[in-house]
Image (cartoon, rainbow over all chains, first blue to last red; front, side, top):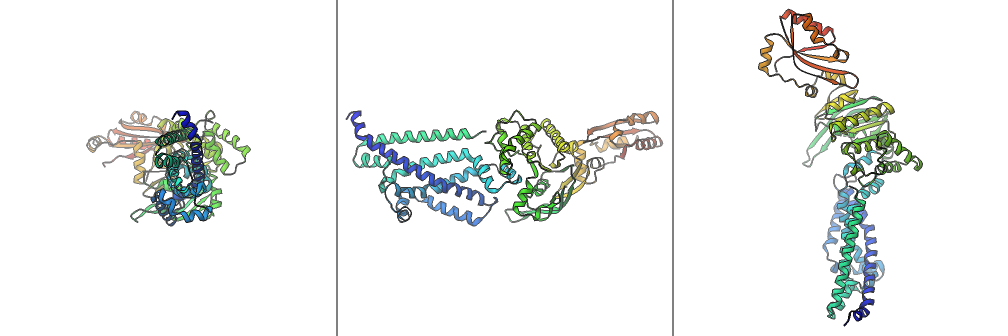
Length: 222
Length: 339
């Protein structure tokens, strides 16, 4: 088989799978950040000796996050099928996989945000408190702002983890690059297509990591 | 301007033991003065200054700033009041990710200063602290002294009546410390801002403070005008601080030996008496020889202050006359005895 024939035969499949992967990653990332970032803030604020110390909120949040994070994605995907159906009305296709991907990623992002926000110098927060600035403004304009370099690096890690999880999306018919590699490469024993998807994934991950590193360096000023 | 009434503060440590940081501290800082609190580390001075704007909530006692009781305020009212109490810190506490301009502009925006005024204010106060060239520079590109100047400009931009300084010069080298102290003096004089500062360094007190309180183990052990505490310290800790400026540890053997030929005296000169050559006059007028063992003169905020340890050799009748003469000239005389 020449390269041209190979291209003609697989171009459509791979292109479609790449789009599906991008869709799954971007939609679930956006939702997971909307849930994970506030959770991370809550973890930081309610921990012992912090401004809104509350051991019940902090401990229960901790436990829930740890429970969800203990479950491998492939199991989570099936374990929450009824929940998924309840939320989006279906448990298959791209739509059906977004819910488990969010459930899987949001607690992870919450942890990454927590560690990023904890790095912010407590003195700066205090200086703003002393200037009579509202707590919610301090959270957004000081804490999140100062943590941006670490937040970006954390999100880069989360995106890469998310791409890994989407490989299993094929199991519920959501397609994606991982699905192509598995179905054509493994089940139908056409190793070339598997290698091609692997190369695409490597390029993707390298690209994302470099973009993340660059963005983080750009907002970091020290 | 600032009144602390019977402030106590205790923390519970990890082992559930109670740690008492402040014990019934009362202070009054008058409008327009620079008041210093000095003490060794762990004396409770940092907790004290943080109680003034309630960054630290006292366990008991009341805090008044400009006649208003902060301890009784709602949190919204407290925030409003805090905007008029500037504070600077040992660690500067600037946003690393924001330019010098934004470091001052962001808090102004968040406290509701109209957009049109923000840029004017930032420019004005950066000029005052001498950083008008640095608007678009990030804090990491500034020296420690420059960072503290930005922090001072940030505090001033809210046009406060009071400025609290929590060891603001402790992380700076001596030369930078002096320039920051000069700046604090300038804002005290030009804007009439009352300053309460805490420090562990005597030269900070002597350079800019009008009055001082000495703290130890969570208590104020002595307070008063700087000149009085320097010339006539009462409490052991105050004496230790003052003696650190005038080291005169004469070994007992030497002391005994010298005392056989005449008294050893500490002479304290305040203000104009520092210009007079009192000691050399003594050896001319009376039949005594004087021998200086140690001495130092320092500049307090508005007058010089000096201390000499001298040996006066001669017959008792002559040395007595010499001491009387010195006292007449406005010099404080204290005989040194064995330790």
